Length: 480
Image 1: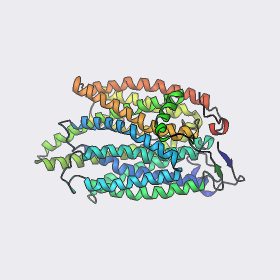
Image 2: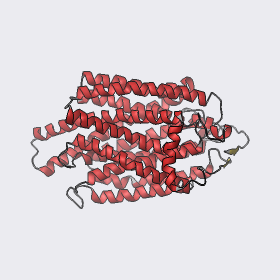
Image 3: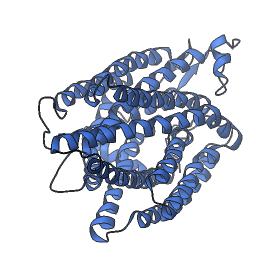
Image 4: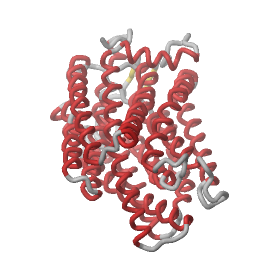
């Protein structure tokens, strides 16, 4: 249970009055909120340096005669299997280490990995090391869990209850801003010729190092300057390491609310990954046609063209996704949440996805797919990202640290696995065209929309307007 001793109410500072443009910031909350904003800005900036390179590297990898779209899909499935073991290790560490130690050590481990992959990039020490692109693709998934997901776990723990509902949308603006800035720098640096794609790995170290320092500062200050937060242990003190991973899954399956949250996470990623695979498939076909049309000869030259073309495409694609997401996050997220509640932000994405894949089924060309995927992903990274953090407010601290990483990794990657199965059956077995694969997504979105409605109804039951966080009203940790 949290015991909070807040200082006497003070007038708003100039900083806090400025931050009220985005959400309802109150006296004393401004500086820590700005620190968290900058923290996630740097994390997402670094993430988008490596994310665009991930697709470029996998585009020139050759494994067992698989096409690039198959290799991408199957690698995502392998990533989901790998995470079953990784998340258990992470849960053990979260039970053993204080949150500042956990965040610091995990981030420093990711920084070390960036240096290793910089040495292994194609054309540096090796012409094209077999399997290196696959390993890097797998590692980027780990990056998303260990750095990005753990930040949101930290933020949900720092801002409990009503304060979280007000301030998480502000922090999410920093996430979308960092993603947009990282995407912009990626495409600008590559197109200018100032750096090659591999150098982005070293550049990512700079914002990641800054994020560690900001996390330590936010943890030391607390949500409000002068506030004292006393916590019991985040987890049951006698839980053994072997039971932590299984305990997270057991907790998910015991509580209907957590189970439906996990189901929506899986369906969201299944649909989104299917869509990304469709875009990647059409893009690779387009680039290979350009290789022939430009008269590019030689395997090395063709690989370099496809790799750089893929990286540049995704740098530009991610820029527009994140720019639109930034505008939606800054101008719409907190207002929709305040005026319409959780349903107003959680149900927008499946509705847009329904329109997007219906459009792809009618006209499956790269231009249409690019525009509709930008709309879908911009909503995913803004309004839906806010919703995914807010839905954790009715849960206990133990649930956040045990089950949120499991859902953000295992169930999200299970969606990747189902997308890989979709590629296997759709391409290898049935040889479906892009139009029919888009219709598969339309059916999945219908299931996703129904599950999201269940979350909205349960959220309203568990956390009625004005109710405190569960830690202050129920020490048992039971939800339903």
